Image 1 (cartoon, rainbow, N blue to C red):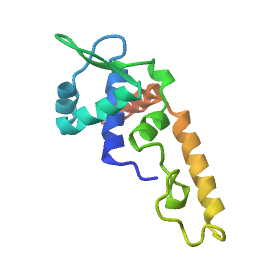
Image 2 (image 1 turned 90 degrees about the horizontal axis):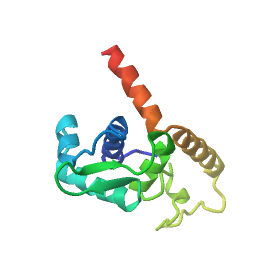
Image 3 (image 1 turned 90 degrees about the vertical axis):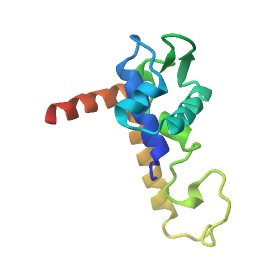
Image 4 (image 1 turned 180 degrees about the vertical axis):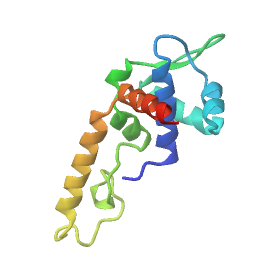
Length: 144
């Protein structure tokens, strides 16, 4: 359930692309400089988002990244689960490819609670889009 730097930086980049949707392409250098992010790491993140078809890249002069869909069509959950390899499970036993089985797997008193928490958390992330991220960003700017 922990969102890593990778997902955090990915959401920052995707929100920036959403803010510039249908106006311009942005390079990783521009985004990295604006938010003081490590550019090599951001480039890796953007390649993963491109491979997942969440962003498109335009090569050459004036090139860079843009969203593959409108900001209102891309959920926060989609971005995070792409970068977190499809799981934000709060406990290892809910991971799709769990490596070490839990000794309590068949008799765990907390498993159903973890499942409920995970389901609700996922629904919340699915309900927020990049468009919503922009609304919250704009709101935060007003308070500074």
